[in-house]
Amino acid sequence: MSITISPSLLSADFLELKADIERFNSIDDLWIHLDVMDSHYVPNLTFGEPVLNKIKSITKHKLDAHFMVTDPDFFVENFKNVGLHNFTFHWEAVTHHDSLITKIKSVYPSAGISLNPGTPVSAVPKYLLGKVDVVLLMSVNPGFGGQKFIPEVIDKVIELDKIRHENSFKFQIQVDGGVTDQNAGYLIQAGANNLVAGSYIFSAPDKNYIERINKIR
Image 1 (cartoon, rainbow, N blue to C red):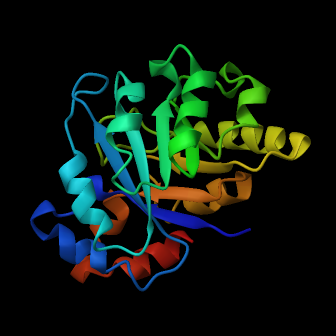
Image 2 (tube, one colour):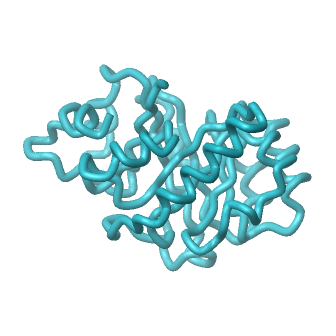
């Protein structure tokens, strides 16, 4: 099973963002993870469209946008020219999930849903799991980087992986929050195949991000 690593730019040095992003261009099976926050759904404010446009121009990797926003429907149209590969919205922020997934897939190659730590996998109907490309399981409470990993998410990965196999679904299981070389093995063994890591990667001595990514993988 191929493991995609998604460095979260939320933990990057914003004063050296271009250089940090370009350090990843020599690595394969990588997504660039972008936490788009509106300071409403979560108490933080991050990237907007102008920044994402610049990021696309300096990376060879797919852009993976995680919208921690109250109204993700608004952002589908507004970000269509940024060059995003994946658009993930929070399950908890939406009422009409089916129609939003359909709208996302009409604009972007990949559509994802994200579940907060307290939201069970059973909250998502199986027929919708068959329509998405990514299921993002949060292993911290969303909003800020550098939080401690919630180990109970491993059970959710196992449950979701079982559903995926039983129904021959194709979605990636992505995990975001407190991922390090200490828990990545357990997550991969449980069925995760896309790991988001921010603080662990960007805190590497001498900016040796490749070594940290290899350790996670």
